Length: 135
Image 1 (tube, rainbow, N blue to C red):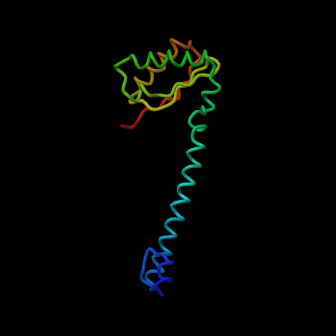
Image 2 (image 1 turned 180 degrees about the vertical axis):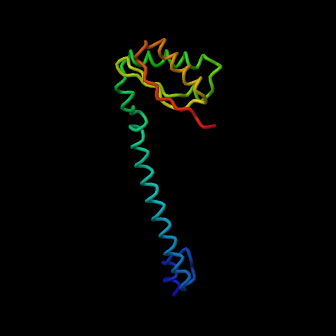
Image 3 (image 1 turned 45 degrees about the vertical axis):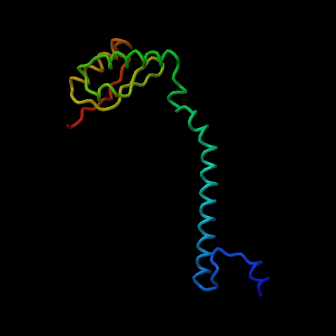
C-alpha cells in the first residue's frame, strides 16, 4: 500500500470529485496560457515588418513633393496666430499639386493656410479641402 502511494504524485492529494475538477481546470488554464503565448509570439514576429512598412502615400511621394510638403508645413507652423488644429492639417503633395485636408477653427485660418500653400507651391496648384469646425 505504501509503495502505491509513493509512486503517485498529485497536486491535490485527496481522491474526490473536487480534486478531479481542480485538476481539469488547472489543465485547461495551462492550455489556454500556452495558446495565448504562441499567438503573442506569432504577432511579435510579424510586427517588425509592419512597423517598417510605409503607407502607400509616403511610398509614392517623390523627393520634390516631400520637400514641398515640408516647406508648407514649416510656414504653417511658424504662424503662431493659427490654432493647433490649423497647425495639424494634412498637407499632401503629388507631382507638385498640393491638397489640404483637415479641420480649422475659422474661415480666416482656412484662408491663411491656403495662402501659405499658394505662396510656396504656386497659384493654381493647391486644392483646399479644409473644413471649419462647428466649435
